[in-house]
Length: 238
Image (cartoon, rainbow, N blue to C red):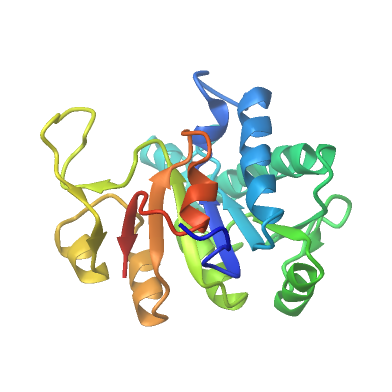
């Protein structure tokens, strides 16, 4: 295994649920600090990093709309939840000496820059981590789709999706002990098999732009570094 990163620029997609650890709701500061340290380790290898975080630990727009809330309002609330998570991660990264910039798709100048593609790319070139919050700024789009959109905009080499499982399986490995894990899988197979990797819009946007997706377990110490150094971890969608 080489000690040089195999990717120059990545988009790291983190789930909101990962930030709550074993809590039933909200943010576990210890978990966020561990995430920040994992990110610092690859940052120090010279990798340019964009980050998108979900908001499911605080509020899920789609779930709320299924219980009667108007969908657009629910999605806007979900976007604001991603801003809270992004601020938490930004704080943890800066406490350990990593320069960051937070950009939001909904304008809130007191706490973040608006999403400006050229500015984001310039930050990356100047070795700052850029955290993209508030999804695409539009209802009906998930943070997975936002992650792919931002990855394409900043010309990332890959999307790395950190989850609670160590890759993509043909069924839930928690419920089915004999579930089959894919080492690699095509975009079309993900869609046709109905695998819960990312929503269809995100997968097709990745496919159209030939942007590979790596799915791995973010909760295992050192996994992110091993992945960046080329070790065969998780599942690759391409």
